[in-house]
Image (cartoon, rainbow, N blue to C red; front, side, top):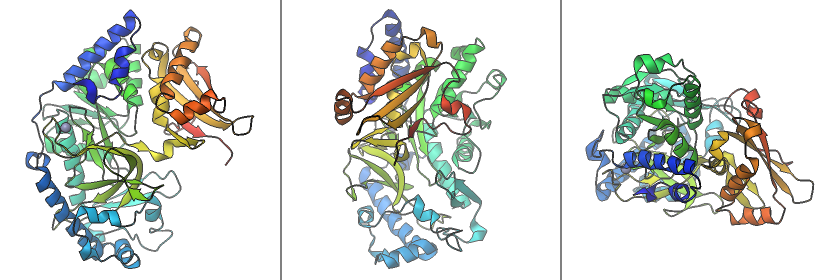
Length: 489
Ligand SMILES: [Zn+2]
């Protein structure tokens, strides 16, 4: 049963001491609780369990309507069809989308003020726009998104399905530690909670006073892996065990994470941790209690996987960038519609076969940000690979889990240095040699090219150990940048 949890096998045979055996036993307990959770709860059962043939027919009907809607209502796509000599009426089935060009976040920025006079992606009348959202622009101007109330209802439907697939019901009360700002995440979850009949505690941040847990007895918390881990340490500092609280599950989202860090968080809290992947563009995918990948709500969003280097779409099981297409139900309206939009997140389609939870919608791996991938001598690695190496069970006796890594030019020609900084509970008591060995073994495990460079001396990995609060990002505001390329371009 546990082969569905990537990395699980590593944990099992890495036990070496009495301490670790106990830890693994805890994992086993936590994981078997996930796997024996009752299945058969659905938010929209007919659509979530629709047989593949019917689902594909529904998707194709929605592709035809969405493309027609785009041609009639989106100034950008009207022009895009014309300049690419695409006849909208010839897009009949979802496979036809594979023959069309791919657009990106940059395309959106280039078709909104100040570059153009109007918002060319706006695909409804201004009077129908209920809210205006923005995605935080890592590169300049934020992208603008216009949502009608219909869009909000569809976004919330996706999260509601995801929550119910994780065992949530009207009996739950959730602390939302995602931000209620210009992105849609926290607000969408709040509307989803209303649809399910759940209670909500909209704190927006994970730095809340611990009386919230004591007085309101929430059953779950939504936040990022690191926020939830810091909350655990804060509880421990106050002498509170997670088992003393009413928390029965955690939902992680907001950024990608390693299976190892998620497993560690689950073990510390003693509850399952489920993943959600959402964006203002409308990807809202969630893991069910089977933890067998994230279900894509295929009737509402179409996802293909694309290899930008080969400029072609890839087969299921191969890694590439998630390419998103909004799907509108026939007669539906939409504020910002996207066809073949590059999410710049990499993923793999795991399966289109029915899941053991009963859902038929396809499952994908936890998407990783392409912006967090660094190439050394033609070999890629992602921030998540660093994280996986940090969170080796043996290391966690000494480490808080907080880390940052930098890539520099070395002193020798063609030499690249990876410097990893790790936060320790007590630097003087940290078994540095053990941590380094486990880090390097895991980091190079599935990376032949990097491993060869490392053993040839062309890719040294050096370590820096700090005490609490000693990492560079601790002095900066905003979301920590944990993998930074400092090579000369
Ligand atoms: Zn499932």
